Amino acid sequence: MYPILLVNFIGTLGFSIVLPFLVFVVIRFGGNAIIYGVMGAVYPAFQLFGAPILGRWSDIYGRKKILFLSQTGTTIGWIIFIVALFIPVGVLASIDSALLGAFIISIPLVLLFISRAVDGITGGNISVANAYLADITDVKNRNRNFGKMSISAGLGFIVGPAIAGILGSTSYGELLPISAALLLSLVTSLIIVFYLPESIPKPYNEDPKDIKKVLGFENKECYNIKGNSKISLREAFKIPYVTFLFVLYFLIFLGFNFFYTAFPVHVLNKLGWSVGEMGIFFSVLSLLMVFVQGPVLSYASKKLPESILIIAGNFILGINFLMLLSENNNIIYLSTVFFAIGNGLMWPSVLSLLSKAAGRTYQGTVQGFASSLGSLASIIGLILGGILYTQIGAMTFLISACTIYLACLLSFRLLGIQKQCDFNAAREPV
Image (cartoon, rainbow, N blue to C red; front, top):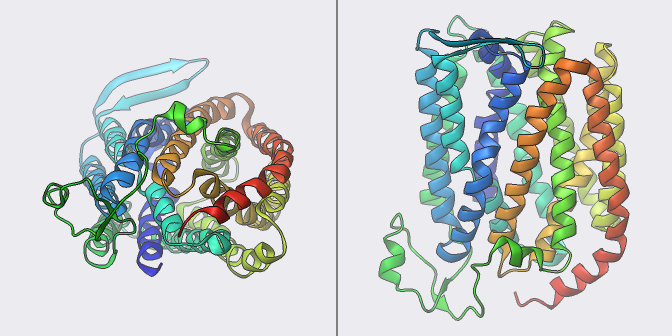
């Protein structure tokens, strides 16, 4: 488990470095809240098409090769991002409308969009990493180990914003944090190549010489895999309970992405936060998440099934979004406790239940389709979140809360689904 946890940690760290100052860069290059939301939506928009393909390829060619391919795209994306920082702000178009507000489209802003697009089209690393974890984990420990995966991501979100706050406060501005993200991306690629073993065996009907040509990695010994792991989205929806879990997956992502667009702009414009303060907030939030997804989730998963943890987690998470309606810094920081408890209990449980419903044969494919639905929700949430915040301000957080509470109500159906998923997963051969 440790190599995949390390890959997840470094990948998240590299991504989270950009969070505290991305809104500042977008605004400096001529954007506004809506452009910031659209910028965030570019990655999931391209991931919408890339993740299912990468997930399917990981079922066929192996997780390791596809993780490496995905990480290569991330590295190229960061290189383009750095180039954008050195391009003069040449105005390509100037827009001022009642709905979209006032902003300009500049050359470096376009390069930032291209950077996120390149990273997004190869952005199947999360879904493939989840499939990898499901490959090497038995049913009994799956929820706990998905919690460990969330912990590694949480640690990345602690260190990333902290590094951004420190390096971004120097005279070099955003250049040092982005350079650090590029370096971390290269380190992740090396870990995948040299330390991450393949988690699935190669089907007997594949020619080992042909497979080795795909990035030239070694494969496990062959054995007969029954069935065909290459399925369509329509066929994935026919797997029992997967459709309902996809709906929950979509709603949860939608609620989060209203928040992700509105929050940075809100604390920048209304509360006057700096890059350092933004970094401290996300670091505190991630530190609490690590605690919840570590000892708290480990204890709770022994006592309660995933269905109960999903219901309770969504209810608590909704309280967090309601607290953000306040402009009091103390209440906003207190909301991180509810965010950490709610998301820390709910999200690993959703991933665990989805992996049980998917089964071993279609693990990568289903995780890839789930990422695509999450990407679709992110596109809608990030763009609509920017528009909503421009029109109604902090009331956007109320929309987030309502979306999460809708997921909470729907989650009561999981009480019946849980038993059948556990039964089916227990019958699968290891």
